[in-house]
Length: 324
Image (cartoon, rainbow, N blue to C red):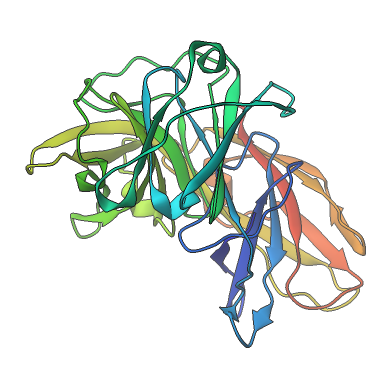
């Protein structure tokens, strides 16, 4: 999977593509980006293509989402699969199981609706394949945190390089027009909402994604204001704990060490962040592991240095975790 991000450098803004480490890489189509897992991120320089535009590639997009349950009706946004052609179960190792026989119904706006049979709804997850993309739906490994508002999440919210993929929970609805639901996050800089996409829905959950979110969507208390607009114009609103980071990778000269820095938002200055780097072919990243406080990071402390045999923008493999 790929998606171009704008990541700050010393002299220019470099287009970077983000991949889920350790997973199969599928080409991304419009609006496609999927969840980056706990195994970290791979940042790779995007190339230019005269036909498709900067950093673009062709092929089916691949998206990962989570629902707390696979039972009941599932509504899928056509932007992510197109016409659904097959559904197959998967186990926790990601191995494909049997094809699931389901009835897929078309809804307004091209959305699709289906229900899994009891045997499939008890599985770890399913792969929904369509004419334009592949959607992986799985269940979270841990129970969702308690929500103090109308909207909650099934896992802690982390914004990575401006990208957010999460699942929101809300009071159960009779979903008749899924295409009429809208999702937004408040930008505290101008008090305007930034719109995202709803990937898929259930009666009480919506898997959503945003790209290019600024750090200002998280306020000084470490909360993100999310708003789900329902058909008819009413809203669910909540302040949800969130944090995020960006990593700043400079262009490098061959054989010359260059500093890697970062920025973190939504966490207190004394929170500790661990960075684990894996050097790719032709690179030396030293140290490979570094723990810094948020205060040190945001004051410009060097996280690591990179020395390369290949000049220009550098692919980077890194895992970022909060450890305290």
